[in-house]
Image (cartoon, rainbow, N blue to C red):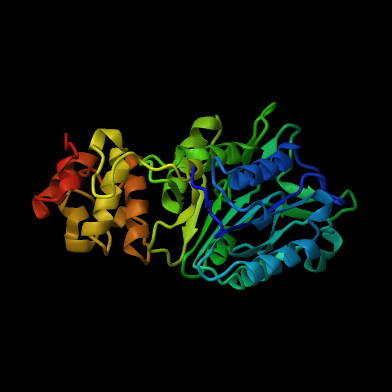
Length: 366
């Protein structure tokens, strides 16, 4: 265990299940916030200072209180710190099709006066921009479905309605800025499952496991942002029998930054200069790390993706090499990226360029 913990970690966790004016959500939403807070604060897991982990639940999660909580997070978190913002509750879609925005639905949101009683995506983006840290990660678990049927529209019983969820435009807006990333529980057209009888939502179940060490497959002693998303994105579809795919947005993210300690900072038994054997570490993770190192501009660097049989038009564009490799490897693992490319062909092509690279040498290319 690391006796110094992770004092640079700060978090604001918000959860609303029992709304004043719109439909309630399963109690698992409150469990989600409490369990994430406990995991972040635990010296056995993420090792944040408990004083730096603030929760706002139900009646305490008003519009005013949430904005104040974000202001206080900005005030206490320094430039070299890591900040996490977690929200579980209703989201609402506003605006015209093609130009849709979103609102965060706080406990006191009144559908008769959305503008003054909810938090718009512009307001939320502005509040996040005031958090002047090098590493900011935003989690949104919304569009819930589970327990009693939850409509895709929020109503107040007085004739006012609001489309439930978040627009894809909002996710991109909230991730703007260097060192900032957003992880959402599902795509804009999907539902975030809360399975009957389960303590947590599907997304938060996977997130908790990742924060408790499952995302640190290399036993580095840290939970890192790309590793965490990789883990969550692979686990959620396994847990949810219906379609649910978490999404990840990052505008200018070049580094696989640490979010927290893993197992209180427990590291691999390997010395700093000794790499584990490929079969002792997830081969996909090793390959991604190596590719980021040797082709820093991404899959287009030295045309490595094309030479390995891939189709660059099948890959999403990302402004940084690391983010581009992260997305490309995930696409390849799911069977995409071009008909002719595979794990083996990519390894073989990289070995042709860097025949003496020690980590590449340990990767088997079937």
